Amino acid sequence: MHKSPTKLLVPILFVLIFSSVSLFIDQTGCAAGQTDGVETNRDSIMTELRSALKSEFDLWYPLCIDTVYGGYFSDINYKWQLEGRQTKMIVTQARHVWSNSNAAIHYGQKEPYHTTARYGFEFLKNVMWDKEYGGFYDLVSREGKPIGFNGNYNKTAYGNGFAIYGLATYYQAFGDTAALNLAKETFAWLEHHSYDPTYGGYFQNISRSGEPFTGYLGPVPPKDQNSMIHLMEAFTELYTVWPDTLLKDRLTALFHEVRDTVIGNKGYMTLFFQRDWTPVSYRDSSEESRKANFEFDHISFGHDVETAYLLLETSKTLGIENDTTTLRVAKELDDFALKNGWNDSIGGIYDGGYIFKGDNKVTVVLKTTEWWSQIEALNSFLMMSRLFPNDPMDYYGKFCIDWNYIKKYVIDNKYGGWYWDGIDSAPKVEFGPKSSIWKCNYHTSRGLINCIERLGGKL
View (tube, rainbow, N blue to C red):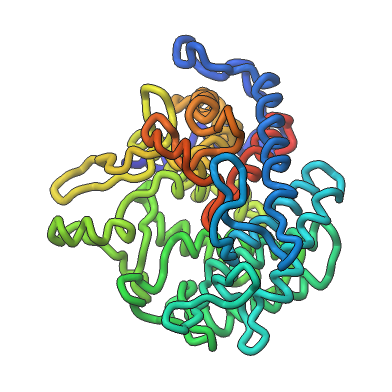
């Protein structure tokens, strides 16, 4: 399932020797025959990536800007027309702020990204922040009225983490101290209402008044990998602009919880946990129970390749960029996904796998290929190709194949934008929404920018 540290000595030496220089990637970067009919030239791929990135911003903005109530529209159909209730979730609103702020940094120019991002920043500050109890509401109506279940307006660590992420980058891009102060206030709110002082980590669900759900909330366990990796991502971003001692302590702890507990030596992440970090598993339960709780217990290949990237970003920020344990774990995440969740015939990362009771191998149980998994894989494979340029896994070749898969099956060549899934496995998504409260251009713009900068030697 995974490689031992001893077997990784050679590639790690490559990293240690060449960490201060930009590693060369061959024009093809893969063995002859593996990528027949696939574009492998770096310059040609860079041109395609830049075009795809420009399209992302041209399509989304100004279309999704709500000039009446502030923030961004959530519901856009397959033809890029506004259609739906337009409820607004903190995650999506903050991601739009982040995407525009990050684009301003990438392009080295404030406009039009500052104007677009400010709509979201003002909406977060004036509407989505709970002025009575603090913290960000998870969901509001288009007009900004909180939406809850039976009147209970719960908040999430995940949502507040993305608010920090967007606010910190907004400050980095545009120098607005009000955004930094709100990010600090959000961190303090999480510290008082979500942080677990007994076992570490953060409780995902919090009541409006700030009481954490330390046990199950319905079927949902109190802690999960998705909250942890994105809090780690958010704290990493905040620490780059605010090197606070407590923030560093919490970021360091999150880093080790993700690397050493959520992943460990398995090569993939456990998805959900009880308060004391006991893994949630239905492997020994009935088939009915296992299927009913699949979302809490399976292998998410997309999250694995994404976390390989996030771990290395955090280690860099913490000053342990060449830490051999982190390099090994990150590499194992990508290798596990490629060995168990990669479509060998046309490329693409599958959505889900499972190791059934009595089995030692992974069975792919979700053969769909969501858009975010593909762009995260693209970024992660290219990252690995620079760290391990001569590795038998041929990361650059997989990067080329994955980009070819995205162009053919995930990017809409008629109306533009990215389908929810690859149309090879889910053809009906051709007429599905281009935007929802769970889909915007955060994954795509981040992955495209990272790949452009890696190919250009900037990362």
